[in-house]
Image (cartoon, rainbow, N blue to C red; front, side):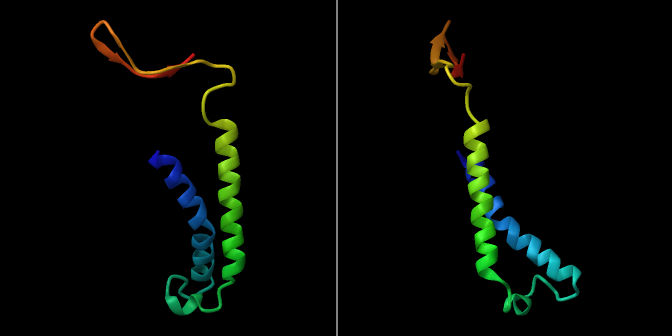
Length: 87
């Protein structure tokens, strides 16, 4: 459950990191607080929300089991715990 959360957190922070790198390469010391005073925060926030929404849509579309598959929960087989699976 932690992996999808971290994936979305990285997607949220990505536009801010790209902007910081842009400031750094422009010679404005992008990772100092002074350089971020005139940052387009609303645009960066909108880009972050778009990245997270796209990530959630892709995760919902491509993640999980195929449609129509059966879920078999964890159970005991020959005295050993069998992992859950989809068939």
